[in-house]
Image 1 (spheres, rainbow, N blue to C red):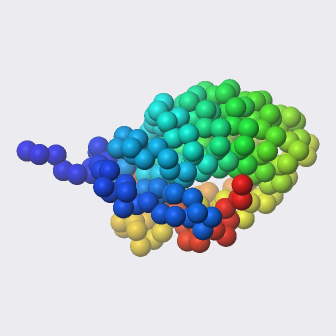
Image 2: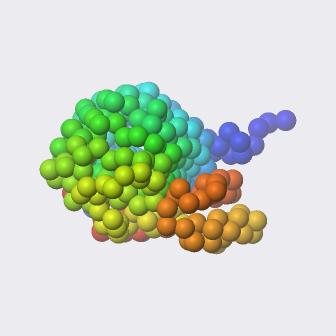
Image 3: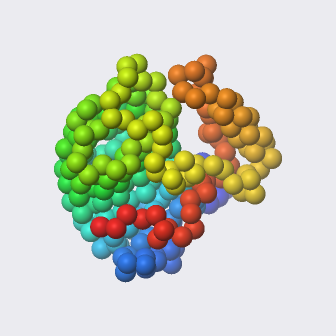
Length: 257
């Protein structure tokens, strides 16, 4: 019996589908939008599109970013939020033009963060929120161009001062981390307006059992102020259609290069 498309193996993306998903951004960049398509594996076919400057693979089922991600030398914008990624490959740090990297709502731990992040000299926005990171690599403190850093909903107990003192850092979100000591110069509130709204499930895109599960977890989460107060972590896994309510007009919040 032939395998069905999609399912446990995820949706198969062809080169034709990828080309049809290409867009031109408001600032004239070539953007590949494969978000929310049930993709389980990074589509190798897009290696034929190595001149693209932006890739959006958010809200999928991807577990691994391939080592060949460095074969997209013009990449400026890379969005993998809401997947199942456990590790950032060292090769991603070879993308010298990258200014936006969103890896929030994945399964990253401290071991999954390479020390080579220091090579991303042009990085303006780094979002690692909604993961399981316990300790930050101090190398993040060398990213002198960094303007926004999302670290909310992790397991971080200490913030290195080198990171909080980054010269251009304007927005730092560290909400709901179990800090064990008072943190100096760490903003107590979120200043990245859009960051908290990226991971709410749209009701009309969920089946009834998934909607009930999401509502239960939301109600439990809303009663606590610190992730360490929970007996267990909030569980949004197993939803039929992982998604977000990211703003439709991306131009209103994209950081200019």
